[in-house]
Amino acid sequence: PRGIDGRVMAHVVDLAHDAGLPDPTALLDANVARARTAALHAVLERRLQLTADGARVRPRWTSRSALPDRKLLVFEFFSPGAAHALALQGPLFPYDPLHETFLNVYAGGTLRVQDLLDHRHTRVAWSDGTPRQSALAVARTFVLQGIRHIFIGPDHILFIVGLLLLGGGLARLLKIVTAFTLAHSITLALAALQLVHPSPRVIEPAIALSIVCVGIENLLAARRPRDVRALLAFAFGFVHGFGFAGVLQEFGLPRGSLGIALAAFNVGVEIGQACIVLAVVPIVALARRAGPMAARRLVWAGSGVVIAAGAFWFVQRVWFKA
Image 1 (cartoon, rainbow, N blue to C red):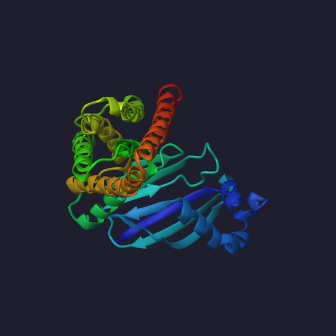
Image 2 (cartoon, one colour; image 1 turned 60 degrees about the vertical axis):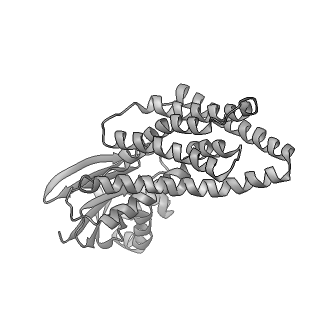
Image 3 (tube, rainbow, N blue to C red; image 1 turned 30 degrees about the vertical axis):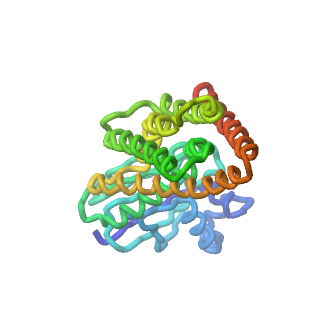
């Protein structure tokens, strides 16, 4: 209730690497460690990003000590104020591909979480499930995560871009985007609530395949009497929703604010999606205004990129997935 007490234990070899010291054991000397303390604190804060109830924690470092027999430095910190949900982003030393950051979370004197962060699993979240957690803080956190996921997910971006390459009137584009939104919202909710949980080994290649299909459809569209992009967006939106849910589950949903978190993440995804639409539609409109030839070239070139990228991801996710 009074705040967060934290302890970070790190090996001198890793700390020396980031501090630029040629001799790691020099950090076991109190005078050397004292001279480097500010720089070491900066490394810890940059690499281990801790949030409490959606707000970034700026630790107040309270002590530093050494464990010479284990070649460890121990840094302790305190952050005042009650916290009902914590999240930690890592790992601490990403320069080492084998590094693992072990995490223990205690609440009320009881160990609640034991986990590790590495290059594949970079985030751990925990919530006490109480309704006291700020709804606004939860909403803000998950809206930002929804936006972030769209912009760090080139597969989702390319799928949306592929749907927009043929252009069309405002009503038609709204129909396409709404169909995608409706479908992915359904599967996002089902998977996030753990009612349906297909394997990522199926979903990730299927997302890549959806991108290939959209690109091919663009190339064949001239031969079709009707625009089927809304149907494609709806059908493949179910698949992309499971992809969004995988990120949500790794991020961690607060039990006490589950509905708010789910809705806010969806809003964030839609904001990111709207930004892509606002960026692509003017380019497509300019090409169409320049003439039929320019519009065709944009569709062929853009669809070629979409198909190539989707095919690459499909092969990578089916045959080279570790």
